[in-house]
Length: 254
Ligand code: SAH
Image 1: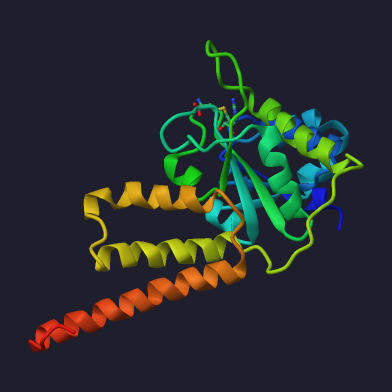
Image 2 (image 1 turned 90 degrees about the vertical axis):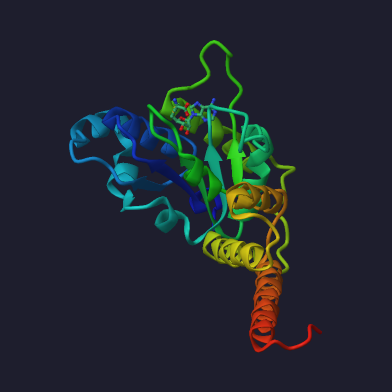
């Protein structure tokens, strides 16, 4: 399969119908067809979107609609969120050119997603947290945020260029890369483990979880890796449970 067809462009609550249309055109220009729109509002002018899509109305017609971001990316491995802002929770952001090979390598075998935020407020902290990678497009300090469709173009262009590079070779796959759904199961278990083992105080938990997500965004996570991480959390929780029961019975500690 052409890896570009495995790349899903996800728009979270886009406000401008024109932008949706322009993005369809960008996608077709860059060889991509899979468009997901999260929670579109009811007043969208789909004729306006169609006008701006021009010859890419097929992409517009084939779009999928989801209520939540989690649903739209559950089957994806790499999920690259985009943010005009840098700083807290975003300090591991990469350039489009740096993230392009990560996206394309994964798209050789799996569904991947590029996630774009609302025109006025971007992506929330929680939405960025479910992304496995973050892209920041360098821009002037005076005015950092690009028009949504321009941001989509820059990201897609870098991937398109790389895909057409004759020296580019997609990797051979050993253990398949894990899905976002599985990653989220790992995070949920590790969160429980952090509480039960009293590894961190409840008020530091959110910060710790963001740190954990950042660690796991630095490299590939395969299904085998995810199973090991789940197993470790599972076993720790079981041991904690045994300790608690022994304490209740008043047994000597082991
Ligand atoms: N005021 C918002 C800007 C939103 S722009 C904010 O501060 O986040 C709408 C969307 O375009 C963003 O959510 C992001 O997906 C994309 N975008 C705009 N400028 C970008 C940049 N410099 N780098 C990466 N993505 C950008």
